[in-house]
Every structure is written in structure tokens, then in C-alpha cells.
Image (cartoon, rainbow, N blue to C red; front, side):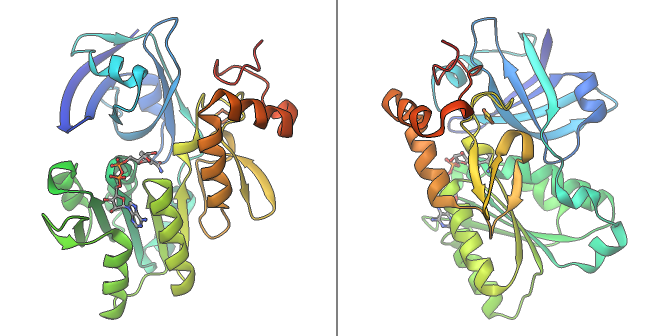
Length: 295
Ligand code: NAD
Ligand code: FES
């Protein structure tokens, strides 16, 4: 069992938990994710790692209540435990594999949207620990939904906060802030965008125009996170990839967002899953409990 040692409400429907999982904490890298399960009948929930403490043996997860399983997760208190806490899964961020001196020469920007701020944080913190400076644009619909602002400010060079309604910081979305900075003469050559699919689509569209190499995290389309359900299948260039085993990070200029969003919507209904099974056949070979491939 994996004990919850800290539980904190960050904003409406957004919660942080520190979970005791020493082996995951020992080996995880920024960009990777874990799968949690509350009990034997529980759904597998893939969550990107938000932070880790190798000495304390803890992993920090941040999640938003979006359905029955996450509503049950919220009911867990400090001292309660997850039955399963599997990880680290997926590939680490590309930045982790690069030479530190090469990273120091790059002008790196992160664009974080809403709950996507959580998986951005460990990458920025890791770069900070290596002496690599980077800028962050973090946005939320309104001031009360901003998370981890002080934590992020402590590890990045320039933090640009945006709210869609103008209640705090720059009035507008992250792409508008990037456009404004660009017009002021601020330049970047590498961007990591993590947030809602629609945000990543538009960040990638803008950065393609501006000539900024861009990485996105396709965590939102994962279901079982183990390569078994086929839900996270996507097109990257002309190659078929699976976000949970080949990613979650991909070249944002090559991802077919429209196809991924359409597939994500289709996967939510029984009829849609049946259609995907019909069209894609054995890519749905079961395991997630959702697609019916187990039957
Ligand atoms: P949200 O809908 O409130 O959007 C958050 C922010 O994203 C907005 O405030 C805005 O700044 C930006 N944004 C939204 N649409 C945009 C657009 N068209 N152009 C430019 N910027 C735009 O999101 P939320 O409710 O806080 O977060 C939930 C979403 O985050 C879910 O869709 C979830 O899948 C996603 N998420 C993604 C990851 C990941 O790894 N990519 C991780 C966690 C959560
Ligand atoms: Fe990748 Fe199921 S989430 S195959």
C-alpha cells in the first residue's frame, strides 16, 4: 500500500497529494507519469509526476476531479493509502537527456495551462537545479484557479501569469502573452507546452509560425497508461504512436491535434469505442476495462 502523507486543496476541484512510494521516487525523472488505483475494483488513473523527493521517498501528484474515480480519490485523507502506485512510466522529458552546457545556451520557454502547470513544475525545477534558466508562461481561466505560482516563481527566471478573464496578471491566454513578448523582441528557441489539448494545438500553431521548436505532452488522451487499451493512439508526422509508451512528449509541430481530439471524444462513448474497434481492430486489445476489448 502507498500511504498519502500530505493532502492539500490547491484550487476548486484541484488537489495535491504527496504519496510514499520510495522506489518510484528513487528512479523517476521529470516528464514521467504514474498510474494509481485505489482498490481492486478501481480504475487505473495515469497522472504526470509533479514533484519527487528521493530522500523522503515521496511523489507529488496533482489532479483535477473530472469523474467518479477522481471524486473517490478526493475522499482519501492523509494516512489513507492507494492499493497501486505504479511507475515511473513513459519517457522522461527530452531536455533531461541533453548536455547541460547546450541547454544553458538555449532560450527555453514553458507554456503551462491550468492543471498542466503541475507537470511543467518538475521540468523547470530540474533545469533550475542544473543552473539552466528558463521562462514560464502559466495561465488559468481566473485568479482562483492558478496553482503553484510561488513554487514556479522560485525556480524560473521570468514568470508570466495570465488569466483568461483578466482577474490577475496578463489579460488573455498563453498564446497572446507569447505573441506580446515576441512583439517586444523577446526570443525563444525551445518551447514546452503542457495543458489542455486545445491550448497545446494553438501554442504549436503559433510557435511553428515563429520558428520555435516545440514539445507537447499528450497525457490527456491516456486511459489505462499501459499500452493495452489503444486510447492514446495518435499520429505524429506520418507515424502512429501511443502516448503512454512512446511519449507522453512529442514534437508539437508534428502531432495531428485534430485527429487526437476527435479520437479522444470518440473514446468517451460506447458507440465511439465500437467504431474505433471496427476501424482500428486489434489496437484495442483490452486491459483498460473501458473499450470492451477484454470481453
Ligand atoms: P482550462 O480549460 O481551464 O485551460 C487552462 C488554460 O489553458 C487557460 O486558462 C488558457 O491559458 C489556456 N488555454 C485554453 N484554451 C486555449 C486556447 N485555445 N489557446 C491558448 N491557450 C488556451 O484547463 P484546466 O481545466 O485547468 O485543465 C484541465 C485540462 O488540462 C484538461 O484538458 C487536461 O487534460 C489538461 N491537462 C493536461 C496535461 C498534459 O500533460 N498535457 C496534464 C494535466 C492536465
Ligand atoms: Fe496508451 Fe491505453 S493509454 S494504450
